Length: 170
Image (cartoon, rainbow, N blue to C red; front, side):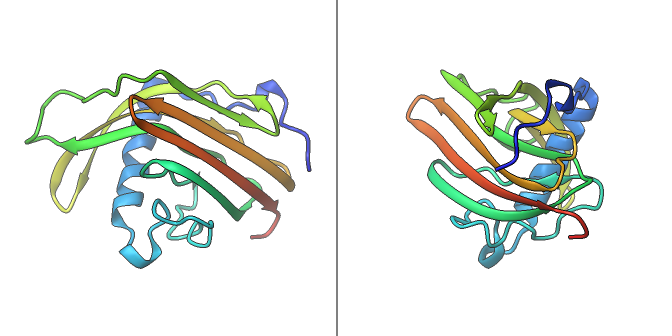
């Protein structure tokens, strides 16, 4: 297993960048066909589905425990949710926010800083808003990593472990 990246490798995003990425992440997740949906995926086999060229999205879950194994390319930053929600503009013009008791992530046992971001996006012509607690990493060097993601908001629990194989030339 590779050691965690140095503290300076945390992807430092401002509010606008994080909100924009949160919207892009949701559009990516909601656009997946049911049989290839990376959020419903329990093994990691669909983790590479329709990834953009400038960032690598890791899927969240619809709650519960999941352990995924997937390969990701070296040279690309990584963006992932711990807890997040989205809704239509018609439902509310205000960002809905989860009250949470816990939100944390660790790469190879080293705790990561997380940020709350609010954003918006359009899907099939419909305006949507999103809120979440997110993590981002600068591109990881080739090697093997374990990313642990945990969150709790009332009875909703996220317990995700990613076994990441970072490879050059993927």
